[in-house]
Image: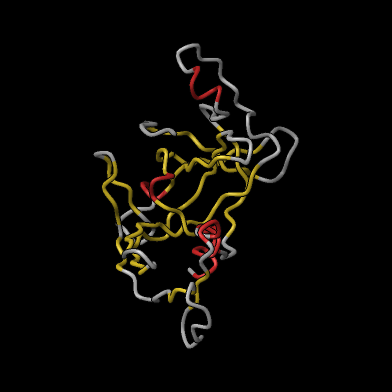
Length: 182
């Protein structure tokens, strides 16, 4: 969490520490290891679950990010759990709601199943396809595994597909009920 907060609040001139580290400067903020863990989350009238819930089906999400050029990019992932974390900044206490996500690796043929759909100009302009190919699930843990829930765009159905002439299966991502976009 320290690396995440240092990244997110870098423009505020704040630094964060945890555990037995000592505060050296007045702008350093302690990050508590206490969280409130949840198995599922209600977002926009839909239930988003995690691996700790009854089924893995609702734990697959697509999240939206903005590049430095202000372009939308999407990543597919699998939610391990949701949690709330409180941090006392210099000016007030902030509550953050996150999910811990393992991300699928990008696939070179992501748009293999390109489907022309004149009704769906918004998704096409933001490079989100009706059906996408993704690589394997990356279980390496970094601060990028902590996702603010506001970045969740929708859930997806996961499938497996092997490209013609290829022996390795790929993950098929079929977005469901895209309600959110920024």
